Length: 367
Image 1 (cartoon, rainbow, N blue to C red):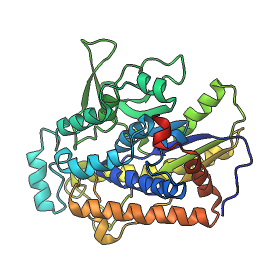
Image 2 (cartoon, helix red, strand yellow):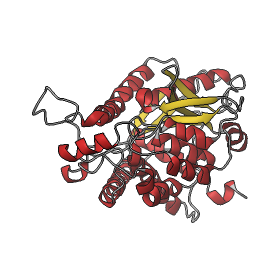
Image 3 (cartoon, one colour):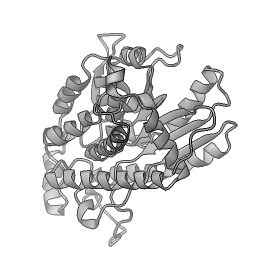
Image 4 (cartoon, rainbow, N blue to C red):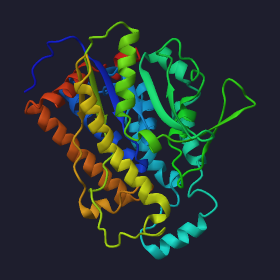
């Protein structure tokens, strides 16, 4: 069993990886853990996950979930987004067979495989006209969402005004921020967003997963900055990092000299980059944390490898029923593993258990 917290209350961060339709896994995983603690606490309405964290960072599909949780939405809002609207958001997933893939590549040779109109419509339904400034004023949850400036090929992190001197992003709508961070090359077009400070100017953004698909370092750095702003240099930091059920690691290297089709016209390198960042950024964040002056703990939630039968469906843009079932099954399995480890006193995951123990029920938040 977990022991009670006996130190200063940590600065708590939740970071959520990108992964296209696989964001369904992450939303379902957090929902399953939340349901367990809501039942344990006798809370019928569910727990407002956003109230458990001081900062939430998310990239691509993880950015959508991050915005939803920061705003105080139930994880089911994102689960429903992908379960009900996945086929309209991802209407033309890349096929696996090389012959079909060639036909698919020719069909989409001059445009992305999907427009972003369905996604944009759903995001506007979920978030309305809420801006980053509105969110922070109402909820006091800091938010960081990575993207890429398309015109300058430079990194970008959309932020709430938790630093009073940082107001450049204040008027961006959450729906537009989500569109920017999830504009995956080949799958979606570059996100074209009106500059809220200059209505005659358009801003162009690409998926933040190109540089920070696992935003754990973004979250850690911002937590250090906020502690410094608040004069809390010694306040401990806890970062909880959640992935998106990447397919089983490894690849059958039958032909090292691969061409365009063997690399799935660019989709395989995109997926490979996402999976490599998941482990690489976690490794860097964990080791950096050891050398900080304050106590910092990085907790990566366990994620089991799907079976080979499941893995073939877990591409970034596959909204099929088989993919949905595989993602929900993995989420259920991994949430039970998290809860089992908490019950057995796993030191790192007990930290997560304490967060769910203090989250506010929805009825308290909206009284």
